[in-house]
Length: 109
Image (cartoon, rainbow, N blue to C red; front, top):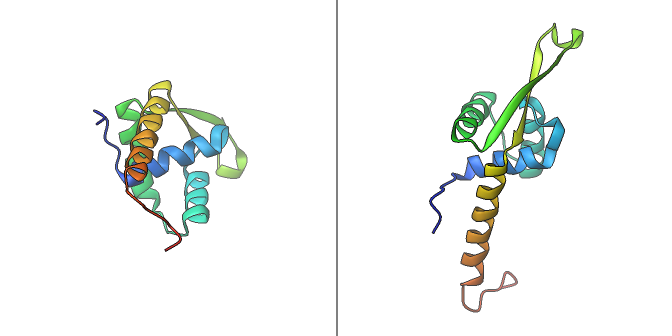
């Protein structure tokens, strides 16, 4: 087993950041998650997880340019770090290993 533990929401956030690549900022992350998963996501919950993942070293962030449309506020863009990519890869391998270990399992039953 891995020394890294990701909660379900943390994993989903990291995967969504990876999907969005250079466009991964708060509202875009929420929109992508809600569209793909058909579930509501609060900005507060997302911000808490983004800060936690950044503190763990799985994500990094940087500010974009200020825009008039946002009243001069800058967006904070997130990206996976090399460490974060390794953790996601490890989690994926663990999950696949568990799925493959189920004897005679079929989703068609």
